[in-house]
Length: 467
Image (cartoon, rainbow, N blue to C red; front, side, top):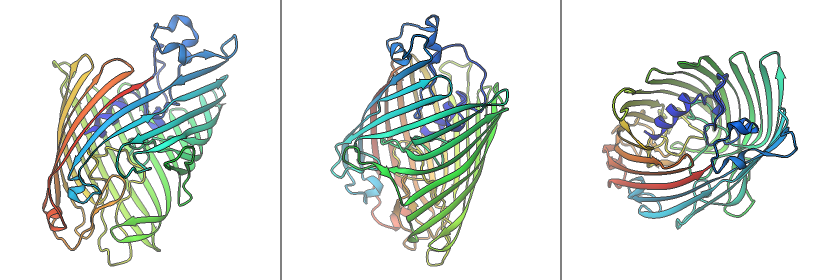
C-alpha cells in the first residue's frame, strides 16, 4: 500500500500536477515539502533572516549571489542506502531467484535563481548495487546527469504564469500511474515542457524522450527507441478541502515493445481522467484510462479503472487509518490474433502495488485493503493484504517494468497470488528517515499451472538522508 500512502500525502500537501497544485493558498513561511522532483521546492522565504529557524541546512538553501539577494543559489542532496533480499523472486524464475544485495543512491543538486523569471537546475545521480547482474534501468549507474535544464517563467495576465523548461528533468504527473520518478534510479526525460498556470487551471504540454541509464560514468543518453508527448490539464476546485480533477492525453512510441503476444513497434495514445478529494480525514481518488493505437501494425484497445481511498480517524489515539485500493488493468484477448488489449503503465513507480514489486500493472485485477497508524515521534506502521487475478485468461502476468513474469501458456486459471505486506517507518529528524518492510506472496493456481510455484519472500530496509 506504499503507493496509496505516498499519493495521499502528495494530495494532502497540494502536490497535484508536477508536484504542485494549480493554485495554492499562501502558507506561513517555512520549509517546503521535499519531493522526488526537488525543483518544486521554494526556499525564497529565507531571504528574510526573520524566517530562519537555525536549522543546520538553512545556510545551504539560500546563498545570495549578489548583495540584494536578487540572484541566489540553493544546494541540496539525497543519500540512501537500501538492503533487499528475495527468496524465490518471480516465483522461482528470476535470475537469480534468491539474492541479497545493497543499493546506494546519491542525488546532489544545485538550483540557481536569477530574479523571478529565470533559473537553471542541475542534479547528478550515482546509483550503485552489489547484485551479480546489475540492471542499469533499476540498480546501477555511474555518476551521471539526471536533471539539467533551463527554465523561463513569464507573467500571464494579472494572476497567471507561463513556465518553459528545456533539458533533462524528472516528471511526475497526477498520481504517478503513467509517469513517475522510478525505483532506485530516478527516471528522467530529455526534452521540453511548457506549463500555463492561470485562474485555478494548469495546462502542461510536453515532448520528451526517456533517458536511458548505462553502467559507466556520464554515458546516459536519450533513448532513441522511445518517445513521449502529451497534454495534461489540472483544475483545483478548492483547497480546504482539497479537491479537483485532471484530464490528460499521453502519447507514447516504443519501437521495441515486448508483450505476451511478442515484440514489435508500439504507438499508444492514452486518454485519462482523475477526480480527487482530500479533506475531513478522507482521501479519495478515481482514475480511468483508455488506450488506443497500434502494436505491430494492429489495433490497441486497452483500459484501466482504479480507485484509491483512505480514511484517517484524526481524533482517535494513534490516528489509525483504513485504506482500500482496487484496480482493473485490461489484458490481451488472444495472443494468436492481431490486436493488443494489454494495458501499458509506461513509466510507473517502483512499488506500484506494495513493497516487493513482483506484480506489475498489466492484465490484472487487484483488491488491496490496508490498515495503519501513527505512533508519534515520527513512527508509523501499516499492514496490507492484496489479491490478484488475471483480467484476461489469454494473457500473461507482468512485472513492474512491463516484463512478462509468466506467459499464459494455455492456462485457464485466473488467480495469480495473495500478497501480504508489513512495513514501518521512522522519521528520526526532518532530514533523516528509516524504513523497513516485509512481503510474502503465496502463488495461485495460474502460477502453479505455468511453472515453478514456490512462495516469494521479500525483505527491504533503507536509511535516507535528504535536505
